[in-house]
Length: 222
Image (cartoon, rainbow, N blue to C red):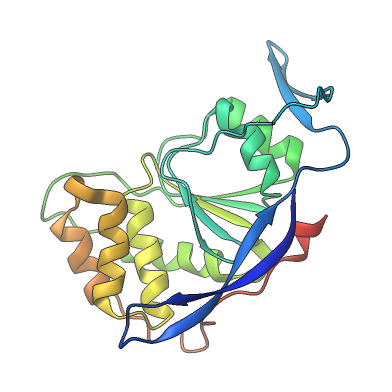
């Protein structure tokens, strides 16, 4: 459970400026942790007995914090559910066209998490257009504080997720060099020129009142 946030100074990499960021400090809860058990009837919550040992939570592939209340990752599976529980998520933005798996849907219901799906094909062709309308609608959901804490994910957390986060960064007035650096940190050798071009040309003029950073959601403390 996230109990408190510490402020740290970070070099932004832009003109030598620094900014203050808030870093979550994760503490072990005093109450027994809940674990998820799986059976033919679905997912059930159960109490885990404390044995004095450490508790290990397994994050999804390419998991990272984007901003206060916004996270990103690849597709979470059942091994990641306990970790997602620790984030107290309120919403998930899913960027793939395929139906959400039954086990994941059951997990969302059990934890009161709302699913927003924007079906974007994961095409590898170099000149295929990325649907700007879907990215724009997904961005509106992602920046709405009423939906936080929120997880953005696609299949690998690289291209579709990277494009959405890149557009979010442009709206936060990041320079293109920093936007591309963040994208490349996740896409690495799989980076696509079409993604970079899409982010470069994405028009953020409709997001004039976009916050430079987001406040901490009260749900963290629940």
